[in-house]
Length: 216
Image 1 (cartoon, one colour):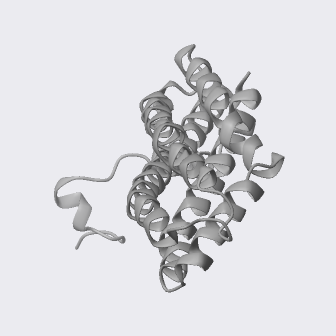
Image 2 (tube, helix red, strand yellow):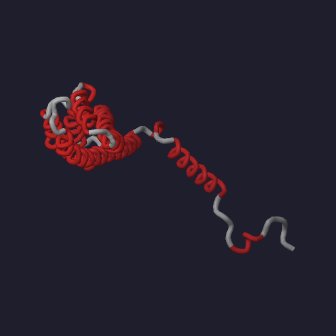
Image 3 (tube, helix red, strand yellow):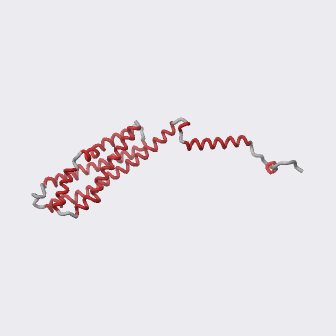
């Protein structure tokens, strides 16, 4: 079960990271670049991007992350890596918010731009661009931040889960398999105790200052 949870966490973190990187790239490179383009170039480019992005490479991680996150929360809640549970819940909430921004705001804007038709037949390209660009860019920044925050929560959940699993393994392992550092400290303390016992108690009083030979 622990292996299943670890695998789920890794896959979820990878998928969330891909989404965060995609939307962040639009925020800091694609949209600023298109902002310098003509109205026709902007409308045509966004219409083509919105068509091309509907492919399995995008849809699989985008859609599969929600059930994967839900599975990770359930596994943690059942007691496997429970210290990571708050971070998993936070990641799930953030991802769901980002998912709603995409489906409820960015996608309708994409559909609206598509309905405008081919740039060759749009009478007012400037108006079509104006109705789309500012709102789409703003909401894309919001979802990029949400996905990035969810990715950060998942990375921390992986760290917490790994630390907790290491502690459990060390606590349940037989003495011969426990960390060498603990064995080293234990044997050092045992050796020091043995030497003290063999040496016997230290002399006290005036005799402690006498080093040998008869008194005169």
